[in-house]
Amino acid sequence: MFESLQDRLGSILSGLTGRGALSEADVSAALREVRRALLEADVALEVVRSFTDKVREKAVGAEVLKSIKPGQMVVKIVHDELIEMLGAEGVSIDLRAAAPVVIMMVGLQGSGKTTTTGKIAKRLTDREKKKVLMASLDTRRPAAQEQLRQLGVQTGVDTLPIIAGQSPTDIAARAVQAAKLGGHDVVILDTAGRTHIDEPLMQEMAEIKRKSNPHEILLVADSLTGQDAVNLARNFDERVGITGLVLTRMDGDGRGGAALSMRAVTGKPIKLIGTGEKMTEMEEFHPRRIADRILGMGDIVSLVEKAAENIDAEKAAAMAKKMQSGKFDLNDLAEQLKQMKSLGGMGGIMGLMPGMAGMKDKLAASGMNDKMFDRQLAIIGSMTKAERANPDMLKHSRKKRIAAGSGTDAAEINKLLKMHRQMADMMKMMGGKGKGGMMKQMMG
Ligand code: GDP
Image (tube, rainbow, N blue to C red; front, side, top):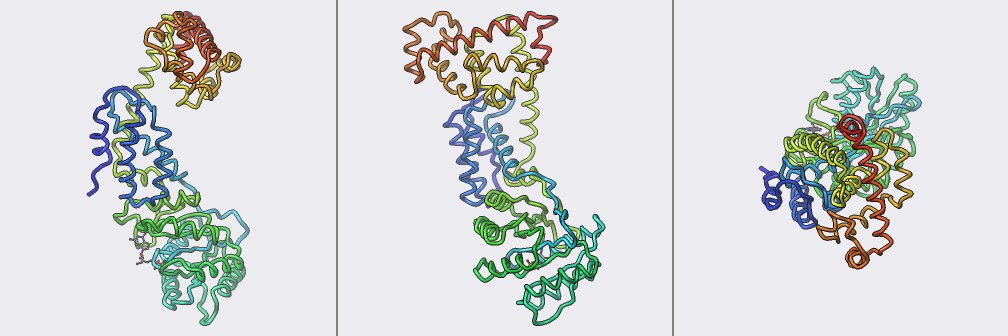
């Protein structure tokens, strides 16, 4: 079995305990393991690269919550990003078009196209009370047309009568015509596959598309597809233009990497997943489940979520206390800047606080905006501990040194100090107001 990512990260990051920020080096070490885990889960190399780049951006500097281990924190960040990349759940087959709505199924031979055609037809018939017609466009394998006819008998869904010698495009046109005459709501075209992508296949698909004007073009792919997934999805999407993905054999022991690869290169939603050979064995897509599967874990994430809830409450209480006492030094400011950065900047924070909308303009006028966070943090980072605790001691020579250290200038340092004074005043004011202070009430 796969060694869990958590175990591996645990040893790499064992030096970091308790609360602290993830450093560039911690994250790089962790990401080597993440990369390995993703490759083992069959995620395509180019997708692994873009994914780890994204995670790096989010993870460096991220705060490690007190009650969990740094490795767990990284896993949580990786897990969240995976879910985001896998995309939204519940994107169903779109039937909002004039009847008969044409659904074209494409994919390689053996991917589960015909089976999925039967499953979708049955689902639309049973759940949405649609009248469905299925047609096999696979003229190369006579058995394929017969296979679909049998699925029709089994599921009670109409199939287009087989006429020998017709071309795929002729069958497609005949199917649409038959659906019109037969009063069908939906017609599903099960196209021919090949064992690999080739030019004639792509031309045939493009031709069928032109003739039948499908509203949905679903790429059916085996979830066990490895590095080929990118090539497969990209080719079908570029040449035919797919509207969604269906991943089959998710009941197998594959780890779902193909889902991430194909979603990442096409940006098209994963609409359904096949979970067995039976006609009822198809489910909606849940990104969280696939993310768990790719990483091979589930518990860690809920553990981290719980810790995050606690820590938020803890932080709010500590901040409220500080404000009440009127003490707000540059260490506190740095902490605030970091939090603001992770919360989507000033706009995000002020938007969350009732009655703070006006404050946003005031702070902006004092030179505070989202882009300045990093430079401001650099300035504070170049100060000594004593200077941070007591900004009043910052005179000309110290400012010169800090400017050099942070790559800024005296004017910028003055701006930061002014902003700090304004915030400290504001907090003193709020801290003193009412029972327990206004801030405590807002944050508590
Ligand atoms: P096609 O060549 O793309 O039309 O593939 P088929 O629909 O004929 O499927 C090939 C094989 O895969 C058949 O034996 C199917 O029963 C099986 N199959 C299709 N979908 C699934 C699935 O989600 N899970 C499992 N376990 N088997 C599947």
